[in-house]
Image (cartoon, rainbow, N blue to C red; front, side, top):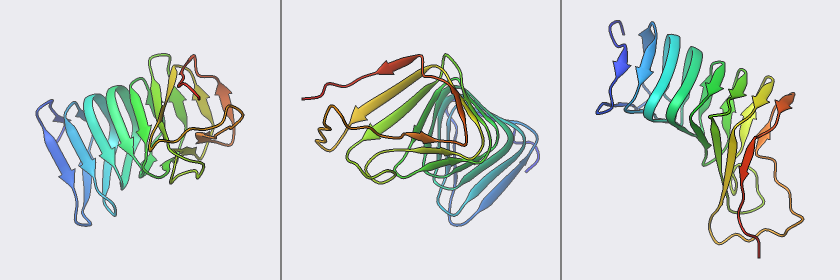
Length: 174
C-alpha cells in the first residue's frame, strides 16, 4: 500500500481473515492496529508507535520498530529490531522478537503471572538475538495465583542479556 503513512489517535486498522498488508515506507501509529492470527503487517521502513495500541497475534515486520509511547501487546511475532520506550505486554502465550530488543529507561515490560507454566500461565518474551534492558518491569498476579517466596520465573529469554531493569514493581506475597 502506497500512501498509508500514519494511523491517527482516532484510527482503527484491523488485518484479519488471513490477509497480509505491506506498507511502502515508514508507518506511525497513535491509534489502534490489530494483526490477527495468521496475518501480517510488513513495513518497509520504521514502524513507530507514538501512542495508542498495537495488538499482534500474527506477524509485524519492519526495518525497525520504535515504541516511543503507547502499548504493543500480544503473542505474535515482531520481526524488527525493537527499541521500547513505551509499554510491551506479551501474552497470552509467548511473544517472539526475531531481532534485537532494547528497553530504554522510559520503557516498561508488563507481565501477568497466574501459575508456573511459561507461555500459558505466565507471559514470556522470546528474543532471538541479544537484548538490552533498562526501565521498568511490572508483574501482576492473576487468577488468584499465590507464588511462594522462593519461586522464580523467567519472563524473557535471549542468547545474551545486558543491563537490568532499573525498577521492579513488586507484588505482595502471602
